[in-house]
Image 1 (cartoon, helix red, strand yellow):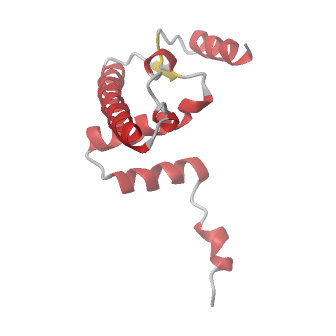
Image 2 (tube, rainbow, N blue to C red):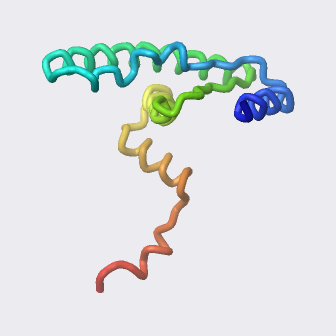
Length: 126
């Protein structure tokens, strides 16, 4: 798998010793979609409860890695968990920096797509 090779090369290049692989920890995620509404609601509550516990643990690991100057990589190889990466950073900034979620979302979107307000100024109605 090419992705595994890239991550291993990145780990070696930057001498990263800690890898947190999430695939086995996220097996509960998005299972509620296969059930009727009553069961689905309870399963969603369970999914979010487990996600909150996982995000809390990851937040502690990230803070420890940062304060001890021990870089780490958080990875998942399954596309159904792609939004979890965003959730990790939203939770981190909310919990660690005390930033409201709407501010975190704005800052992350600027980081990802850049500040493109000048490009869109010409599209505003007069």
